[in-house]
Image 1 (tube, rainbow, N blue to C red):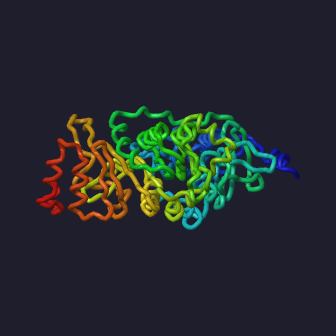
Image 2 (cartoon, rainbow, N blue to C red):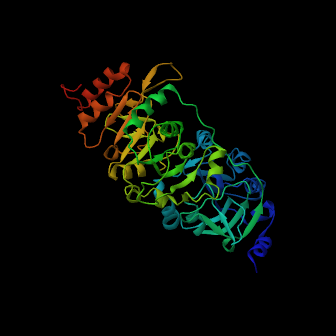
Image 3 (cartoon, one colour):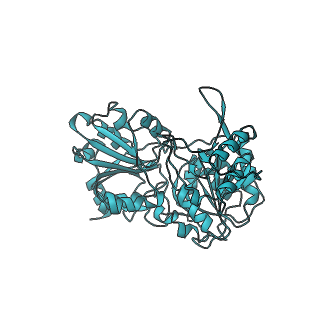
Length: 445
């Protein structure tokens, strides 16, 4: 039987495909753009026939039909490995739960600890002549998910780009139980216009980046803007080794800055685990041999990251305390984002010869209730706040007021460096708190 014949044999409607789901099943939608649209709606329509269905996904970019169909959570329970704005709102309503992880471990979690997924439902590209479908923008840990899935249903969408590997970037028709077809838009993340504060933060980082550096940019507007600034700079021969491929990587490429010539690993290729951004980013990915899609067990392995000389990691956070602890995922117990690969790249970039890890935040914010200005650099993280990067692994903290290099510093040196990049109007109070915690010297400045 040819691959085309096997495809036709397995081709069914979404409604027919989801009949294999039974009560108490765990369903996996994979990562980001692999979340199915038609299959999700068809499963939602079965709400009255099912009980206790758990759905697992990572970085949801569109509404989940199952959860929207079940506002009280009587049937569907939803959990996410990394919160988007949509998942955050669900969590605030008690309708979404977080999977704590260090990103590089996600494939291992499936193979070693989860071990079984009842049904994987994934949105994929059209099949090629050899019977393969691409995991497109969403390699990450999807191959590991498939390897432990009892049943696999694919939703074919011709609008998705074909991402070349790397490894673990495809699924074969022989592995699949059902195929359904549904054309749906590929979700874009609109660019966030930079603020004046973003521009000031970037102005501290960009001059520190040498020619030939290898760049990782985290999720969010600020890291993306750093990349945009690099695209307009005089820098030469940048490389890309990043968990996330973003608009700024394309802009660096289009400006002739991203050549990957100086990389020691995956030379002449930009390595990434997933992509999210504008449509032009997805068009760039499609069948592009200068890009290599990998699982996060590779892209986020600190020992792989460290093989790139002058590895530069740029990420954003919510708060930093005077001990150097970084929170990028919660405000108290309210979950906002996720660990993602921030700790992976903070570790690997510092291990790199000439590498630097930058974690950025605004020095202050305005309290929505009181209108009072408050510091993002705090004496201690509030109760319930999750530590994303421990103080033992932090390198550079950046605000619009400057850069604090914390690596190898004692507690009083850290407090001094952090207070020096806090908002000037809030520094005296931080000094008083540092004195109370015995991490301030009288001679500190």
